[in-house]
Amino acid sequence: MVTSRFSPCLWWDGLSGQDSYSVKLDMPQGYTLAASGRLNPKTGRYENTGARTFGIFLGKNMKAESRDVDGVMVTTAATEKGAQAAAICLDTAAGVIKYAKSWLGFYAFSFLTIIPGGSGRWGGYPVATGIVAIHGQETYKEGESPLWWRWITAHEIGHQYWGEWVLDPDDPAWLWIALGIALDTEYLTSQKIDPERRAKWMGNFLNGLRMFYDMTVDIPPARAERVQYNRNNTVVHSKGPSIIFALDSVLGRPTFEKVYRKCLAEYGGKRLGWKEFQRFCERETGRSLGWFFDQWVRTNSYLCYKIEGQESKPDAGGFLSTVTVRRLGTMRMPVPVKATFVDGTSETQVTELDLTTDVLVFKSKAKLKEVILDPEKKLAMLDEPLPKISRDAAEALALGWMGHLMDLQGKRDKAIESYQAALKHDAGHSMTHSQFNMMIDRAWVEERLKAPFTWKK
Image (cartoon, rainbow, N blue to C red):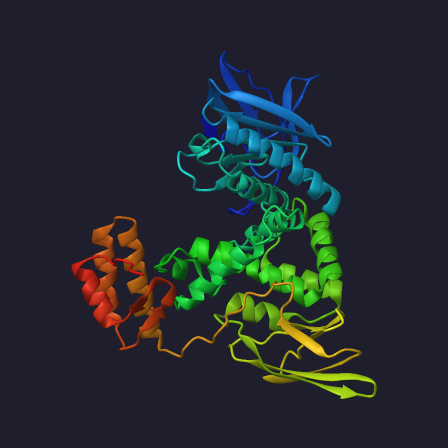
């Protein structure tokens, strides 16, 4: 049994808030109990001075393990079959909490309980304050890589800071997810557990752009309901963190970390939407950031910059190198450009925000060897600009792709509905996916009405 609706709480017109609890629970014989509070051995009550929701988990024939991690009681509850996955989750949680306390100065709560979720590997979710579910623990196979379980555990701990500690008032709510992902990414990349973690989040967002999806973040809920694709995955969980990674690049690492820590300290128990977050960043940095948030949150603009030319010539006992960078996308951004010289030295400059073409000049003792855009890989940037097509054509291409995804899931009836809708919107355009040897156009969609797509090398 799992519930987060057991206890009374104050109601603020549907907006999240925090309440304090002291709850006495009697546990039946043979059951494992978890609650949104830490057990006080003197009172025998589960206590929490700030919980978004108070949850209870009751599991029969479960194996429970606990570990004190720098004052945080971490517990896992699992079936015998899921115990090995739960052990990885427990070890990972200990590592993440230690890292997060060192990086941020505190952990949001004095406890964390990880419980089993659904049967498949669907990820996880916050059940209630201090309780997270991780799906598919019983699917663990002896000798498999622990990476999946580390991903999900770190991800859910990120949401204990952002989502349970700092609350989000927006609908669609995306900021708490994005900032939580920033924490899990920081841990996994800095500890070299998954150096490509950031690139994977951004890659999913970029794939959505290539599908011509409308990736605008701040849209009315009614418009979100009409979206044909998986908006939660592509926009909220992929473009959302891409926005935070880009903000890290724009502010610079020391300033970004200062803002991140201070925001957590000031907004614990409070609601923080993206507009307030923008104002907070502007107040802390003394910089106007409307150009950044408006583009990333309120438009479907995308980044695409390219190095158009580079030259290095002898000059006054050294070398003078020029690098020409051109904006090819619809979003304007200051993009870091790193020049490396043959003697191993390097220098990074940043392009001007409003220039379509910018020429950067580097002075060095040695000749220019290599130039790299966005050397820290914090910007979700397309390699090539998207072709200009009409909205109708974009909808047709997206619907065709959605039909293909339905076919892959074995939902043939829904796939046919998408293909038929795509043909109604057809504007005569096509889209190529060379990695799949696939070109989506009218003829392709008509063929899919007869049979699902088969990939050929």
